Image (cartoon, rainbow, N blue to C red; front, side):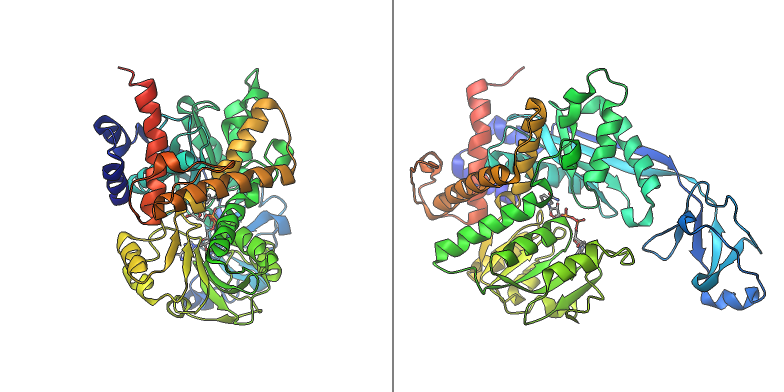
Length: 493
Ligand code: NAD
């Protein structure tokens, strides 16, 4: 909130508007239960000798769903027709080894939806499935959505939510059951014109499809409800270009920065943290524009190749390889494994943090050797990190503009749903490019105290009268656009 208060002081934000924005409108914390499948958990190697004589059991191939922690989730009918030999709850599965059968249990998960502000339109924001979530994290992320939708100039407010779990520990049918129950509990609080979730870390178009089905199930006018979630598959009302939109928007911002510097992206080198949706799409797009990706760090490893990583091969390794249960860049043959510590010190033109928050600490910021940090992730830089970057004159494209491509195309999806239209990818990208570059230019103008009025954009109403950091400038733009609603519409009592 430091940047919020700094920008609020600079624009002389109305006192009551400041109070409205400091805390969310609503904080929902609730619980979701689901029945989990039986699991097979590998036994400790020391126990193996006790079962030397245990005969092998045979289960259908499709009965076992591998999970990233070495366990298998057993399909509900998984033991049908199986030839089972069990001793003390242990079975042997050919080459796979010895496993304890863990009986499936009902489980309770903590769930959240924070609705931060709706002055400019319905609450809008992603759904995160991750172990490191909390009310504080969602409050911060929901507020970021309020700033981001204002900067993107789409008629939405801000929200965020999700469930405390690691989706890699659950099979698809279990995740479906958990997601359906999540939407069942959310339904009284949201709607296509009230609050519109989207994917975020740990969720994707498939989860959105389940959520749409649950929300609209049995409703007479269910097709008018398609806009209840965005980030859907294009075959069920999603927008062309949505999957890549956040990475695409990030690439447009980076392209604009290079143009501002009079530099060419062609032949530039970058390092990337996070190779999920945002990171992998940004990498593909920037490499197609001529940049070279030389290192990637993710939750489970780091790969480095000074000559450039083959991004298509890396995407195949992480996202199309069913054996790679961690969905990690670790083990990629086209680069050498290095430590995360060494990753930060690689010399490159720019760094894209596209993983989780608070990764660029003061210490990391003092060690990185890049000219630009463009924030694909939400809140990747700590306040100390910001200070160090500024002192070292490393440029920054702040998250609330850099990763706003996702919510911008979510808005296009929502409009297409309302109008029952389908736009082409070229149309979506052309609109996105115009929107994100115009808003980025306004932010640069605020930051440089350079009022400009062009056919595409007008930055003159947002000037502060002196130069300010880019992150503060982005917040100034957000606050001025939000405050206008309160000042013109007034407050309902
Ligand atoms: P994702 O789940 O697809 O990928 C997350 C990536 O981060 C994975 O590669 C994972 O290994 C990596 N990661 C997780 N913890 C890490 C750690 N401690 N160190 C290094 N890497 C780690 O998520 P995503 O949708 O790509 O989102 C990434 C970031 O972008 C998040 O901050 C999210 O809030 C933000 N964001 C996403 C969207 C979107 O449209 N998906 C839009 C705006 C912002």
